[in-house]
Image 1 (tube, helix red, strand yellow):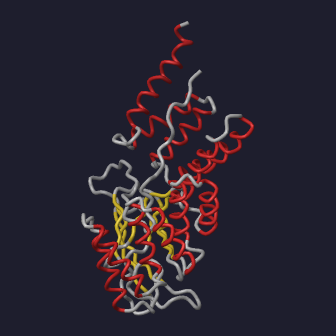
Image 2 (spheres, rainbow, N blue to C red):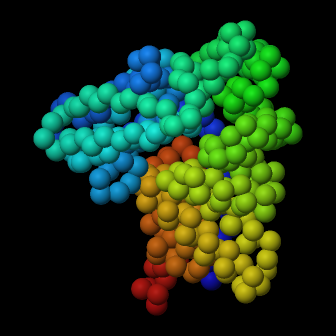
Length: 344
């Protein structure tokens, strides 16, 4: 009987503050790539809104891409299929914005989106994520220095962290600084400091889904499965269309199931993992790590042919992935095992 011989990869680089991700690519007949670009501005004052998460979804279902706006509030998704799309964005304290784009009749489209504060919401300014007009100038300056060092890929991450720590010291309720600081701590495997920063952020905004997902990922890395499940479920209550959140929860249930040896205990957990993994793939069909986890789940359920397809998808989508060599070896083993009855 075929047996599962390696565990699925866990997303170790969960982005609390989503960075630019390449839009899903499809072949098309034109030599000019189909694209959607645009700019986000605040309704009050008309200033560009930087670091706002923008999502493009196919009208038929599935996330085609996600990215954050640059310092000019601009974004661009390239390599899209000739389909109908919905461009949407969310920011804490502002109304959700969406606009339909039809690439079936045009090669490109430029959209202008405006962030309008919710009633009793924050006063907009050119800052990251949750906007707080009470941030002192000195704290803002420290935040921007730390952010630039970390987000520009500079090797001197310790200096960037120091600037962010200074920003939080000057203004303890600096939500954006706390989130970015937690990301930096997680990149350095400093779990205790990362947890403290995220806890502080959630005290300011308890419903911030990105902070909840980050805390869930942190607990997942620490193998605190019960804690991870709790905060990830909370995050999905506020942002159910997060493929990162669903995939992380799928890994949590997989890890929980591994602690039991009898089928009566682990079966329900594996089913929960499968539901979350399918949801992640519905939202982002080209998510390699989700194909790997789904393949492991199907393999565990003795559905070798279906598992084979998922493993092959993982290899195709992430040919240089951490588990590619192991996956290729398993693919060959499955193919040999499936061919055995034909030779007998």
